[in-house]
Amino acid sequence: MKIIAIITARGGSKRIPRKNIKDFKGKPMLAYAIETAIKSQIFDEIMVSTDDIEIADIAKNYGATVPFMRSEKTANDYAATDDVLKEVIEEYKKQGKTFDEICCIYPCVPLLAVETIRKAYETFKKNECDALVPVVRYSFPIQRAFIADKNNFIKYREPENSEKRSQDLETTYHDTGMFYFIKEEVFLKFGTLLPKKTIMYEMNELQIQDIDNLEDWEIAEIKYDILNKKEK
Image 1: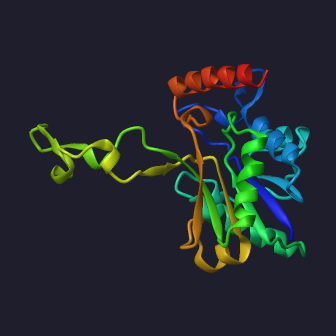
Image 2 (image 1 turned 45 degrees about the vertical axis):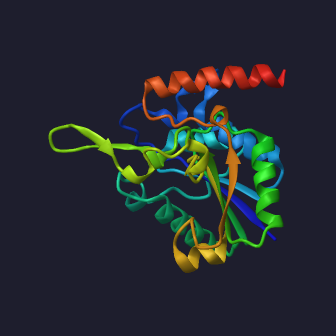
């Protein structure tokens, strides 16, 4: 069984310019995803899909391959991750290379630990599934969420749950937005990273952080320091 790690890192970033290679704790943000993938020792190939020459050079310096550049079609603001992965698979096929499993890793994951991706892969392999997604529990029951009407007055979205105890409500989760494992043939058949037979790998809040603005960036740095302090 051959598995490839595809790290998606385009050059455009509106809210944090050059986010994918901006310095984070002494090295380019992208370096963390590459180094974690390398240290996990589970991948036959680790590649970066990018449209940006500077990102490609940094990726190579940290040990990833960039066998081809991303097309203009999959580098714009409207291209989905699925489109990027399909293009990568097609380009590899032109080179006579195929893989059995894919791990899509996003470039801004400085909190992703080697142990996490190893355990997630073990879970993926041990279960009868087609894909795996890392998730985290919602910190508050979404069944008791508020919505606002046209006058901005709030009300329960699901009023039937307003008086229920938290422990009596179903646990809900959301995607961490860090990585995905999937069988290549399944991805090509259904064109999604979340086919029907997808299992979850639960993580905790300290291990994850969306980085969409500078405040998120600062929170990620704090979490990084806490996690590294714990390891030491």
